[in-house]
Image (tube, rainbow, N blue to C red; front, side, top):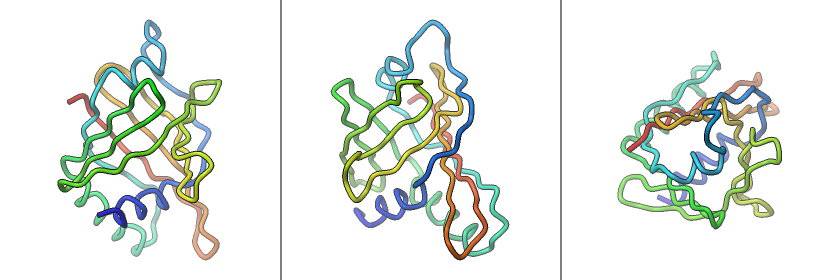
Amino acid sequence: MKSTFKFTAILLAGLFLFSCTKDKNQSTESLLTSITWVFDRLETNSQDELVIGLLALAEALMTDATYTFRLDGTYTMSALGETDDGTWELSSDEKTVTFDKGTADEYQQTIVKLNGNELVLRSEEDPADEEPYSVTFYWLRD
């Protein structure tokens, strides 16, 4: 299962600069860490059939996946009875989350939307042999 998480991490590598929508009364860190997030769906703007197929597989594997962010800068992602632990860090502008900073598995996601009920994270993929595309993950409050 660790390879599934690594595959997902590779899909999510990159940074996509989108504005962040969040509750104005709570800090980003507070909103991230106060909720267990349950995977809802993912979307892509890719037109490549291989990419679409791989993302459909990733989406199926992530059914019932959860994300738990902790104040100590660690996270746990659980899916298919397996867990993956790592670290997370919020950028100073609170728009980007860096996962597993300083490791071979490091990747970033932009916070597109964050409130007490929904977390939307997006990454930009720019593979050498394909057109760039984005992947957007939707997480809901548990």
